[in-house]
Image (cartoon, rainbow, N blue to C red; front, side, top):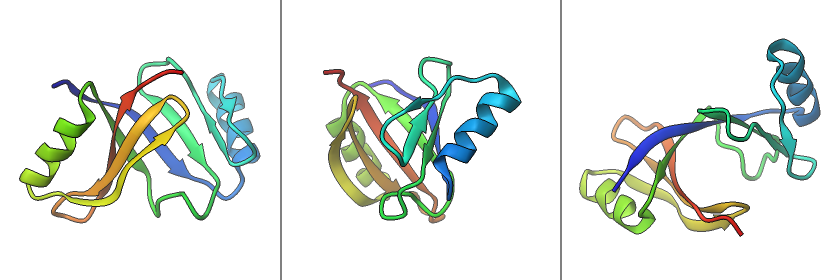
Amino acid sequence: MIARLNYVELPVGDTAGSKAFFEKAFGWSLTGFGPDYAATMGQGTDLGLNGDPAEATKGPLAVIETDDLEAAQASVEAAGGVIVRPIFAFPGGRRFHFREPSGNELAVYVNEPG
């Protein structure tokens, strides 16, 4: 099983404003996925901006990529992690969220284009 940090998602109050900021400040290109989400794509460790209050986490969300989501979830649980959002589909794949013993929320995803 591979596991590498490759995405950071930020909760934002103004998706369009934050998107414009990162594009202007760093020259990044962010793709919009509806009015409440935008992300860089294919730039190493990518950045997501989540403006949906019902979906966004309270703080930055580190996202770990894996090639076997079910095995990763089993490993997280066996190591003492608590699943806070079971596996769900999103554009580009599936993921789950968990809390590690210090209370930080992270996500693990598998890329499944289509």
